[in-house]
Image (cartoon, rainbow, N blue to C red; front, side, top):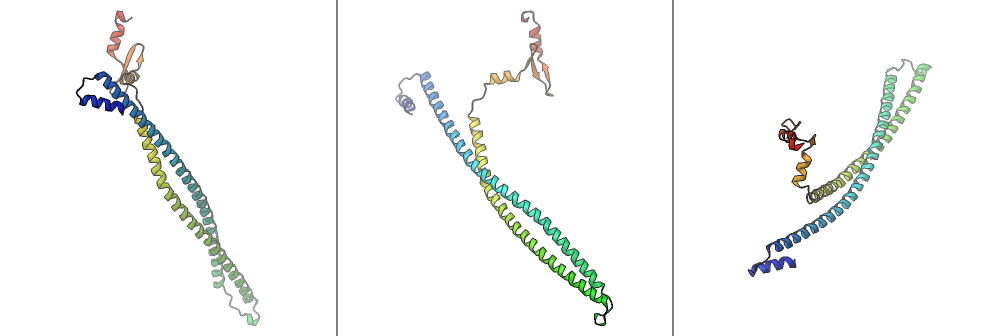
Length: 225
C-alpha cells in the first residue's frame, strides 16, 4: 500500500507526476490484489471441498445403511406375506371342518364323530402355531420398519448440510473460473472463422456454413495467386 499512498500524496500536493508511471504502479497494485484474491479463493475452495468430501462420505455411509435395512424390510415383508397366507389357509381349513361336523354321537360308539374331534384338535393346534408364527415374523417386520424410519431421518439430516456444502463448492468454482483470463477477442474470432481452400467460412441464418463472397473475390484476384 506504500506505493498507493505515495501516488495519493503526490496528487494532493499538486506536484507534477509521471502519469504513465503512476498508471503502471496502480496496475501493478491491482494485479497484486487480484493475485492475492485468487489465492484466497483457491484456499476457500480447498477447504470447502474438504468439508464437502467429509459430509459426502457420511451421506454415502448413511445411504448404504438405509439400503441394507430397506433390503431387510423387503425380505421380511415377503416372510410376513407367506406367514399370513399360511394362517389364512389354516383358518379356511378349520372353517370347512367345523361346517362338516358329522351327525353321530361319540357316546354311542360313533367313530366318525371321534375322528372329527381328533381332526379338529389337529386343526386348532395348527391354527395356534400359524398365529404364533405370524406374530413373531410381524414383530420382526415392525422392528425393521422402525429402523428404516430412523435411517431415513438420519440420511435426511445429513443430506441437508451436504447439499449446502456442495453448493458452496460450486459457487467458489464459478468464482475462480470467472477470475481465469479468457482468450482475447481476436483469438476468439479467429477460432470462430474456419477457413477452407483459402475462403473464409461464415455462418448463415440457418446455422450452415458458406464461403464468404468477399474472401472468394479476394482469392480470385491475380495478385492473390
